[in-house]
Length: 267
Image 1: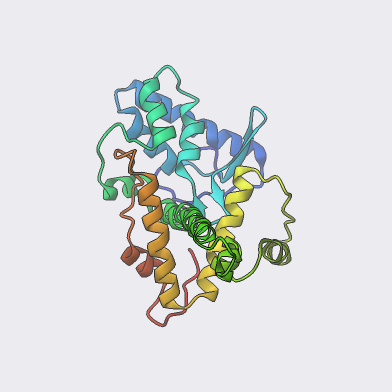
Image 2: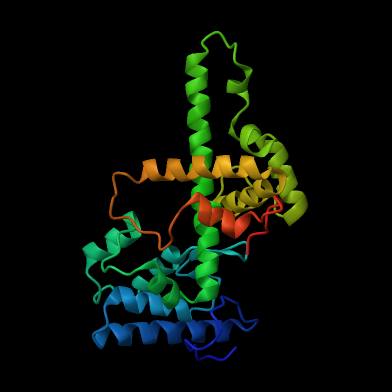
């Protein structure tokens, strides 16, 4: 990989074997980002363009580990945005930056097509994987946990055995211990009891893909509705939040569930 990163290159995130090349490439993106903002481009638009040029899936900077690409497929662009914005603290309004990073509020109004165009096709596709495979999946888990909690309160004498299944059993057909063992068998990664955010999201994305494999089409649709509804409820208080994607069961089905009923691998 060249030390120069150009927007015309394929929109991929791919680490070079030479760490010095990766560092140079990152520096080039940061330098261009800073120059674009100083030249008058809005910082958010320049940020998205910088993200589109970025090539490194993860890095350690000032002792902190940044993982932008989960399992090689799911792209967390806001995590990369945080890292890039740390490079221009004097050039972007603090309030707008905090609103973006903590509530997802965009400082300018861009439609989804422009957002996708600035990120590039491959990164936008990976962004969709992150939204559906991590964010919506976490919302589904929370929604099922709330269902179980309500069932437990509604069955004070323990008559309803379903209330004691646990979220993992109900959604994924196995308890947490068995799922962790299966994860280790498939990935070679042993999960500790205390997981970092990146490790947890990688596990959630793996669970998402396992769910698509084991559930029939009707169950996938039902759980997708549940996850989307829970995510919507969680965000009612932050009406300005934007994800750069139209979240819907139809969009999910078109992307992940082919007409045969066999789930499509996340791409």
